[in-house]
Length: 442
Image 1 (cartoon, rainbow, N blue to C red):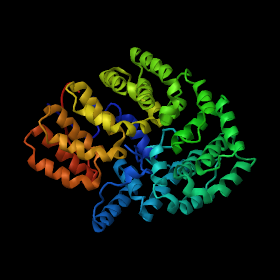
Image 2: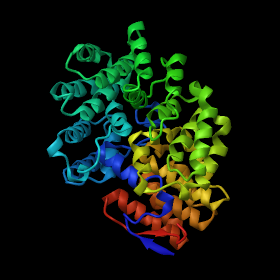
Image 3: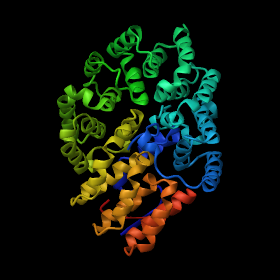
């Protein structure tokens, strides 16, 4: 047995350490069983109003520091559903993302990234958020802070039809001769998700997906807004043309977002996944998630092969975790959350441990499975795996789950599981660095 502090993570966290640190701090609520803007994801129990107000003040205070804890950003995105001050705090974080020299210390040296999680958080209130987002867009300079601008604009697309009042603003930007071709490609996807599915708009999107320079920004926004219904077979075939480009994940991830609609490419993507696994290439993580989303019949086999090879498919030095994060591939974890919970209970300890780590990479966006995981920690399963689940709950459980965690801690007899449950509770309450239990082989 060994003890690890808050930044000395065992390999059970291999899918989330570098990538989540990068993606969360650049603007995450990472994101994602059902996303923040979807109904099933919004129905978890909430703390009482007084407790929530107190927690909000704690989160807002935490965000004022130079290095806000990822947990604070995540929770504010959740509160943004019905809390105007929280939404204002998120918009302030987006402004920091786009202000160049005024960026917080934790962003220095990192590429600008448009996080699907932050987009989800801004979009979660629906129509209520549109005036604030439009105001922020009106004050933004699309050329000087394009990722800042894209975060805001994509959140409108993520809201969908309830954000139709933004159509005139977006159409004006589309007509702006000074706007870049990449921004216009993004806006067309956003317009389609708002309901402008005219022949002109859809033909322009198709042309952009066929264009070598515009296919990536177009695919990126398809992921951010979770486009599905209006994406045509011709568009899917246009994306299929780019599948074999090395180190480019935006198109494969977009096909994963489309799920069964992209089934024609399941075989091709599985072959790419197999090659990546055989080569020990970390990009296998993204391709595995894509295949598992597209073809349910291959889901169990693909996830098992991915998890069995988790500790040999690259590391942070090779940049694969960063590429996975930048492509927003972790948006593909939430639809797989129920399968991953089952795999956390698998008899194969490697599969079980790494399934916990993959769930943790999606953090609060898979919080609806937290009660099942808390229940598992109280069961009779393998002690090491239960300790790993207790560890992963640090990222997955939300503030309202604290009573359940406290109850689990009171009734737990294993010292290893107790240590991680206690550390998880302390971290959720305070954001302070804590000590964890981690088996030596991790």
